[in-house]
Amino acid sequence: MNDTVLRFSDVVQTGFPAGKRVFIRSDLNVPLHPDGSIAEDTRIRASLDGVRMALAAGAAVMVTSHLGRPEEGALQPRESLAPVARRMGELRGREVPLVRDWVDGVAVQPGQLVLLENCRGNAGEKKNSEALARRMAGLCEVFVHDAFGTAHRAEASTHGIARFAPIACAGPLLAAEMDALGRALAQPKRPLAAVVGGSKVSTKLAILKSLAGKVDRLIVGGGIANTFMLAAGLPIGGSLAEPALVDEARAVMDAMRRRGAEVPMPSDVVTAKRLAAGAPAVVKPATSVEPDDLILDIGPATAQRHAQQLLDAGSVVWNGPVGVFELEAFGAGTEAIARAIARSPAFSIAGGGDTLAAIAKYGVARGIDYISTGGGAFLEVLEGRTLPAIEVLQQRAAH
Image (cartoon, rainbow, N blue to C red):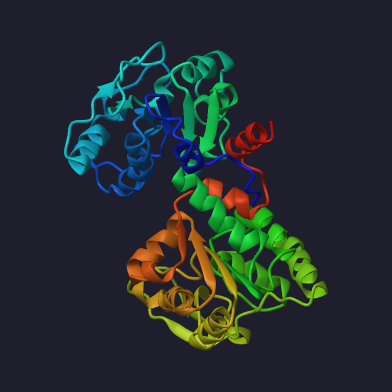
């Protein structure tokens, strides 16, 4: 990923933020319990690095984020950032005021932090209204984008404000994502291996095509692997697959083959007659899948072979499980992949909701060099797309 953006750390080193107003777009879109309390606060904790940097520099600090999908101009109490403000206050040991109706002005002093109410409650946010963006930009001398998870969306608080703020730069979390993705994809240590799992080729076809031109090994899993198995002439029984995309899968395999790379097919699989927690799991050769079988995981021999390929890699990108790991009988393949990536000396980056769930389930987070929380933004980078919120920072840095 292109790194030609101004970083907030560089701005801080100049001493400029002292006494200035700094507007930070964070990702505080945390899961909530039905009673409105916070279920998991990782994103809040992560956001504090940029906040501390700004406060230490003597800035007057405003932070905002989206939460949920409110109707613009009609914010409901359940969509308020009030629980986030409380949690930020607990983590900092002092109250964090929540400011409502903030677009036309915010009272904040140097050394003070305020949280601005859910930015998606502002009319024009989603459509990247220039008028709204200019009003937001007028609140600050420095805009800091520190929400990689929103970088694929051109909205007023992620893209528009960066066009008009006096200074626009990348916060520490955004910069770390850019560094990790650049290391894994732009300048990888070879061989570069990618693990792409999930239920449908159609949802990740662009990723598969993009990676086919970059990686040395493309390990596919889940329903995606079933479609590739069909393309390779292997039986899949009644397994989830997309027969209409067999030609697309074959094209990816051919593109890899022309580069001297490969999409390794399973030699054995784990099957069941039904997808259920109590269904008996049967390991069998990939050539012996019966018409009423469901392939729900890779087999142990395949898992061992994939694991060795990951241990021998120089760089690894991981997105998606290789089986129905939520059920113990069909989780061994994903566990083997997760543990191999964690043990591998390769630089590794992982992202995607199911991937993060697998990392948590198998306790391998410490072995993964970078865990992206970007979701859709992470997937779009894998697809080879330019993210609007990063592109505007690049444009600002170039002028």
